Length: 573
Image 1 (cartoon, rainbow, N blue to C red):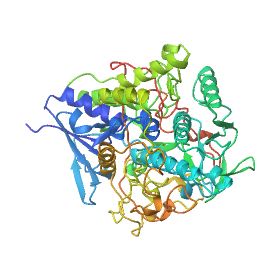
Image 2: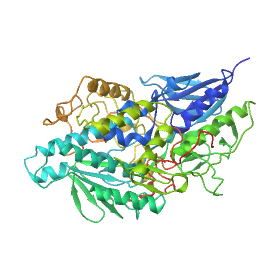
Image 3: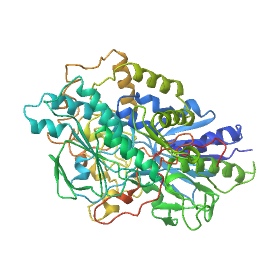
Image 4: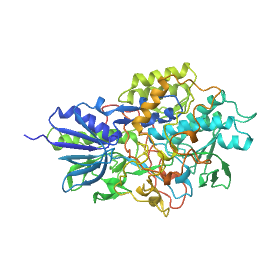
């Protein structure tokens, strides 16, 4: 008898959990195929620690083939789904197209960066959703501090050591908190001009930091950031971004070479072309995660509008915690549709949140008990170790080494600015010069006439004249090789070749490190990222709701973007 073919699109929190659950339940009685642009599952909650030099990149990248026995991995990005023919068309990393047939389909394609129609943001800002972006930010921040230390005048020094983060949700808050500790450690080796210190700004039009969380946690995070020296400005955002800095909505112009965009996400455009009803861009499903009228198709995670049984009439927010739990429920219901068990609706309960603020500081409320300081820090790290599906010992080892040894601050120059444009629908893969163009389903070049238009990742931005780049997997490998080769912390040196001498084209002088994103070549997409019981607080990179610009986006009341964490249990779903 022919075994049923189950195809899972996306290895983010929802897709990875669905694949893992099905690999255990199928017992070789079904063919389970996982389609994903990369060969790893990204544990996004720890990305800020990668950017701050605490963790090496492979620590947060969990091997799919190594942790999903019995699951066939197909590298590629889904371009279209034909539900009548029951096929998924995809393009592999080398630009070759392929088709997968299915008897059951799980769509877990996740979300992509959300852009608002603010002049200059697409050209001068960078997001924070994938390993290439984290590696780029680490190099860029390191380079700016080193250049600031050697600057000939105070104005240039001040601009280079000013870092602006937009979005005070989980991601933005953690990036600012970790970034400040990282640059402070750098200037101890590369002193700036007398009286000058690195300046980090955290902006959001919301009334408080971490608006998705309980006010007590919000106050804790705000206090820690301000005590650390972060310039927290609520009710303020970016009106325009230029080569030389950003113009704020309050009229102030801030000279800077760094703009980190942690505003929000929108569902992957792949679901737009399925021909089925959408709710704010998310594919409508029933409480069993099935697409109405298509009993063989299931959807979970950020791209699915899943009814919230705790709030009738509402959908669950776009958070990693929900995605992780929905992945398990989807897998159970797929098995049920094949007669293996009884199906069950998606239900959840909040178990708490954790927000890592760097060092020993954190804000957490496990089981509703508010914690702060070292105790919250211990709970937060313990949660992440328990939640990760792999690499736990390596992560713990990096934490231990970081506690007893000085942090390494060297720029490896492996990711160029043009390789990680903000408009990319695939932040998980760095763009490669001369790489194959892959039009994404539902993607179009935004003309800046509205949020959706600006958001849409278009193929028009993928040129062919950019310098040669490196794919994400190579970047990670080369990073580790370079460090294993004994790259010592740069004490009196600029920490690596200046950007302009790197293969990758000359970076724009006043830009955060490279050619304007829009003119650059495209690479592969990377959408979904998984992780064991993710914190509810880890929603997809911050809800768009708090950002300014023509045409406000409705935001999802997500408890944060990969935001941290409902303190969940393997069994709860």
